[in-house]
Length: 97
Image (tube, rainbow, N blue to C red; front, side, top):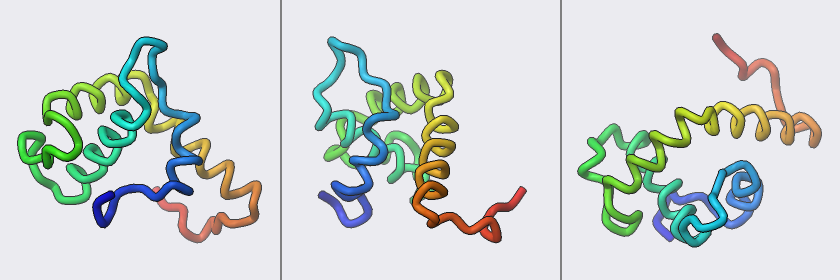
């Protein structure tokens, strides 16, 4: 696992909201691709610069594109905020427009 990849605890919260087809990639590859997407946006690099450890850049991009079109990232954000709120760990002073 690379320095900024999601931890096992974080992945346990994220994984139920990540769509995977019954015949899709192994869960380990999906986690790698998710980490690759995060790496790309964290660094501001181009898709072709995504490190090979996350899989082929074109696969990482395709996964991002299909998830974005399906609204997965918004649904994930909503679910994570709801989870944090249920634990009393959300501060509305952090919410901005």
